[in-house]
Length: 192
Ligand code: GRF
Image 1 (cartoon, helix red, strand yellow):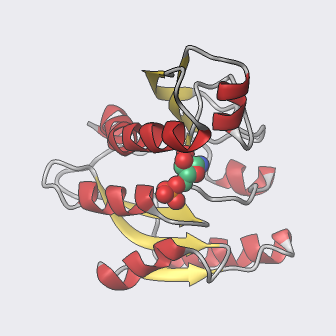
Image 2 (tube, helix red, strand yellow):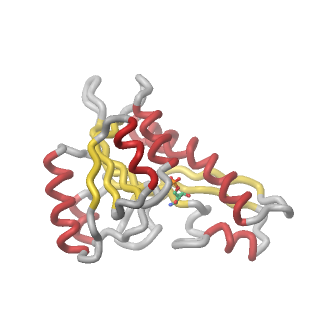
């Protein structure tokens, strides 16, 4: 586990594939004095990720890797992460599955946010599944990344009530709002 030493913030990379609202939120959180992390690198698997705009906006280094060849992508990714002296990785809507080897190299230093109450609904389409199954509760989970998809140790979870009138869109909106609170809270839980 990474430990905070003195006043130095933990150099963090955020991996994205899409809108990047969690990325934006984590950047804003990192700028708070009491936050234990700094966001020093943004990684994406596509140059189409809307969230890449935050690299320019907040003057953060960004790198895009083509994950068609996972082995080559991760080799280059590792070089960049090491060069930037990254100590901690937050996955935030990153749609690629990292290899066991990569995860092992960063054992206990990669976390992810997932839009369901894990272990329920690993993988995609979590909100549709919750609505279809008429679940009373939905939510989000921050967890360590392990070799098995969405199965690492849970750090923090937030539960919200599903209304009868909820659609997959309204539920996604509500859960995302909670994600923006949960991710910083989970990081604070880990590092103080
Ligand atoms: C979030 O719901 C996150 O839990 C999931 O993908 C979505 C990403 O949203 N893994 P954003 O790109 O952070 O806006």
